[in-house]
Amino acid sequence: MGDNSLTEPLLPLNQAPTLPAIPGCPPDLEYLTHLDQILIHQQVELIEVFTGWETENKYQIKNALGQQIYFAAEESELCMRLCCKSRRGFMMHIIDNLNQEVMRVVRPFQCCAGCCWCADSCDHCALTISVETPGGEQIGHVRQRGSRWKPHFDILDSSYEPVLKIRGPCFRTPCCIEDVNFQLMTYDESQQIGKISKQWAGITKEWFTKADNFGITFPQDLDVKVKGTLLGALFLIDFMFYEHDKNNKSFLN
Image 1 (cartoon, one colour):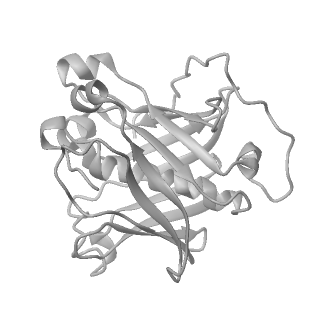
Image 2 (cartoon, rainbow, N blue to C red):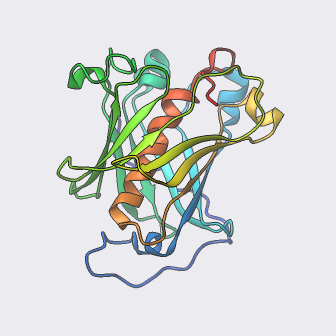
């Protein structure tokens, strides 16, 4: 998909400190072990705002204090962005504050996938995302599950064993100006342990750009690989529901 060069972010001075290596933790993901919340802010692309020309997405990933801990840069083919829009396949490079790639989120292009009623009928009908190290070692997976009205997702480990579930809200009209929450549940659905939130970013940003703000909350002692996989789940949710043209956008609440 495209070339392998990474777009180096212009990093702010307000950066989180680098932590020493932790046994069993994928390299450079050590900072996630101390967090129970992540904020993700998509950057506004002026070319896209004024021309409608689909550009590669970029996101700042921050802690609760607003300090940048990672930067996410999409890699995708131009024809895929122009023709397939939000359904495009991509590789999202997660980069640390030293501009070193620490993780990848890979979404394959799936032409006919995405219908919540058909997602359980076969693997080709369900949207998926894989999270891996830069060397290709699997960290986890996210898979869309079948449902009637609310979006459902499974959080899977590197061996495709289920770990957690995400339960989304019902569809509503686009006039809602509050946060939209996707509940993070234990796999038996007996307890909610966190959430992925699409945060209201203000009328100007919401209606005139595709740049969105998100937050993820989870237990601090959650496995670091599962925390990394939840980032992949967020990107899947963003592209499924919030990457569309503003006039045709799917809204959830």
